[in-house]
Length: 134
Image 1 (tube, rainbow, N blue to C red):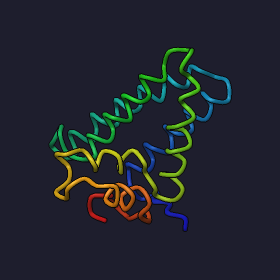
Image 2 (cartoon, helix red, strand yellow):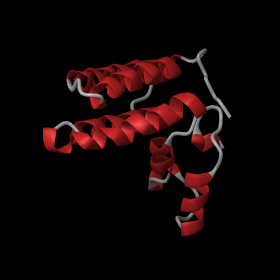
Image 3 (spheres, rainbow, N blue to C red):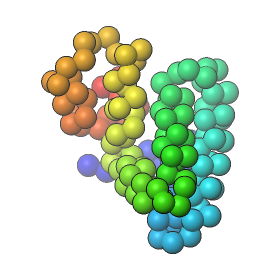
Image 4 (cartoon, one colour):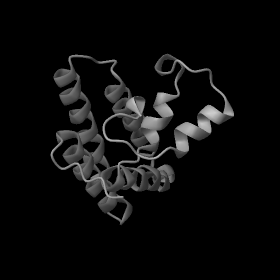
């Protein structure tokens, strides 16, 4: 059940990000800005590492960054609970809802979109590596 991939640099980035988000939702909103900053650093780091700015892992990070930015206004900061819970799921059990959603973008799939495809993508078991491999 646990999928603690502590040997991967990506896992450590997500762990620190979710710790920042957790402090944020517990009442220290400055940590939201730190999470946003770390997400930008993470996207740059993996763009250089993967030699691509359009690869699937970068798309996930850009969408994640967008969600954090949308949640930034004080009236919407309750939305930070979504990436906080989702990122804890990623760090602890390897389930990434954001990656599953990004994998359903038209340019990331070969299969025709259907309710069954949606259901299979969202409810499939976590996999090591990318959801696109699973």
